[in-house]
Length: 239
Image (spheres, rainbow, N blue to C red):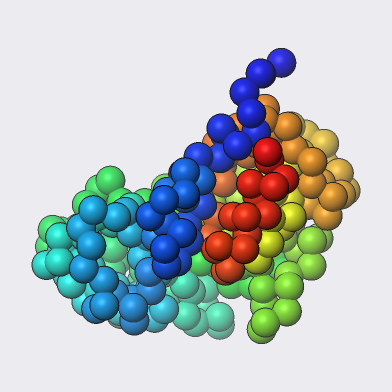
């Protein structure tokens, strides 16, 4: 059994806005949207860029980031057309390929596609297949129309991505319990305990350091909605 502290497995996993990113070991990058990017001029801080538009708005913010000399760690772009999510993913892929060809997006920058907050079905799975085919990461919402996503739905998405061995991030995470719950549920699914156990782990998280390390293999980032409050809660929970 590992003797490391649970917090050791989480260093750099979280993405937070504002001042939290500057001094917190748990935070690996500062969360910045494309609309906030013009006000950012800090080449020393790693930036996780979130594109609030679709595929057509990828190039502009990336070009600005290059001109500012910003250190991008990831780019997250959402599926803007819920009627054709798979086609939308293909358009995002084309935009990313063009940005790389133009030299404004390095190969080292993780590309994540935020999948729609819809039940796992044919359209959702087709979009997930497109993400897996190009070896991008997925990004999973934790709210839908301002309402928390039910644990069963979130576990279903995670399970579907693990079936494809597709890494993912979770976004708009509000609270330490949800942050730890996502990780605990991911470990439960990967260890073969099934969806019911994963839902329980999501609702009542108490992950060990080993389980957190397992989860982090697949959950590559946690975007915090309320960074300072959630980080305080995590420090209290993890010790």
